[in-house]
Each structure stands twice: as C-alpha cells, then as structure tokens.
Amino acid sequence: MITVLRKCQEVVSYLPVELIDHISRGLNLSPSEVYGVASFYSLFSMKPKGRHIVKVCMGTACYVKGIKEVIDRISNQYELKEGGTSEDRRFSLEAVRCLGACGLAPVAVVNEDIYGGTSANSILNILEKYE
Image (cartoon, rainbow, N blue to C red; front, side):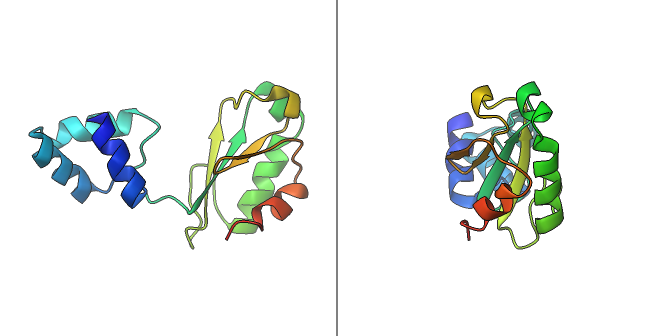
C-alpha cells in the first residue's frame, strides 16, 4: 500500500479523498485502512503541496543560529505558515526536526538543494531562483 500511495502522490502531489477511495477499491481495502496509513506517515500529504518544498531545520544548532528569523521572513514574504502552502502553490513550508547538517547551520532545503548559513536576508534571494 505504501508503494501505491507514494506513486500516486508523485503524480498528483498529494492524496485527495477521491484518490484514497480509488486506491482502496483497487487494493480491495476499506478507505479507512488506506487513510490510516496515509495520515500516519509524514511522507504523505492530504493537502495540495507547492511546486517547491522548503524545509527548514528546527534542530538546536539551527535554532540557536537564527532559523526562526528565516521562517518568519519566508512566512511574511510569501504569506504562508509552517506546514502550509502559498496561495499560488509556489512554495510549501515545512519545519523539520533535523536535517543532519549541523555544521552548516542554519540550514534550509529547497526541493533537493541544500543551503547552509542561511539568514533572513539570504533566504529571499535563494527562493527567488524557484518559479
């Protein structure tokens, strides 16, 4: 089921209720079983995501070095909250516990691109590269 959910999310970018119902019929499972798995794992999203996923590290090193200001700048500039998606679906903002790059703190990841030493000023220049 996880493989099917992953493939479907790759195509649609999230898992709407209609898709979960379709998957449940195809796998001969109840919709609640499929929903239970999809809602349990943070890998899956029940809400539409942006074209670009911005992950900001909330680990101790990043927090001490100013990641909160980076998050605030992103939130203000693009009018989105942690865990949310901008209205134009350009960006989704996710706060994560640790990205495993403490030596680069504060760290942000846009899609698969890692940015160390980010600041409230530099993050806007970084994000402007992503349409």
